[in-house]
Length: 393
Ligand SMILES: *Cc1c(COP(=O)(O)O)cnc(C)c1O
Image (cartoon, rainbow, N blue to C red; front, side, top):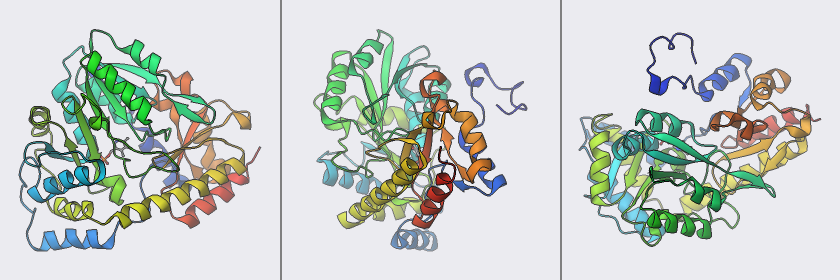
């Protein structure tokens, strides 16, 4: 934590400091290193989508407060996207809510749905905002740890089942999963759905990497499983899918009463955001399949490029089936402390990564794991691979 916050920060947030991304990005800047820490692309998204934003700005669409639930064009495009990709029917007027990125959607969902003292189960290692948002909602975080086996991370369904108690209100899921790259299978999702129905749980699913799945992995929204339509809040966003992480356009889809509940919290967080960008993302969601296929193929290639480089440099690599991150293990270097490793890496070879240990409640669980992103230009990835290779054990 920055020392200045400590005397003032309330008890709910006392355990949270500056995010690891701020720390590591500052380190990258100071040392002139290649930043494979924070997951943002170094190439902007489609030209026609940028042009659509410019047109909206010029035509005065969205320059004043857009409607609270989001502009109708974007809500219609989200509904059409869910139908086209997954066969899910959602009513654009009552079952879609536009948010300031997935980040606000997560915050609003937890603030709206969690009572103080409720237990919230989250897959660990988790995206860093989950812990803070559960805390802000007054909930109690219950991690279920994904564990590496045979080269990738797995969810232990028995462990998940055992984590549910009478105080469990909600499962907070993320698939494709950041940082491990795991994509929950149809079988795993079916078991989760059965558990949610049996124990009458709400589920919030963070699906921001829905379009980034590789090999034979398939992204299936949990909301499509029996009994889940009316107990699932599905979250996605334009940042990752269209490479506009700065626009902060996200959305939820859920049934009417759940959307109303989340909107109640959301309206007092930002009220509305990103007016002109909402029109542009409405057009982006209607891009032909060739855009989504091309994007996926491009990232697939980048995954293999960086993965090969990391293996050649001596890392143990957990092959991701989704997202744009690779989790590695540094044990082959004779090292165990990922945080110390990441602090030293810029000096050693001019590359920045992030330690997964900060994404765990039990830092021992991820002690030797380090995450790299591959959403960078090929020349940057080649250069990073060369630099890492120079320090091979
Ligand atoms: C990037 C990311 C988000 C945040 O999405 P925004 O739309 O930028 O707010 C949420 N969840 C996960 C898992 C992410 O990786």
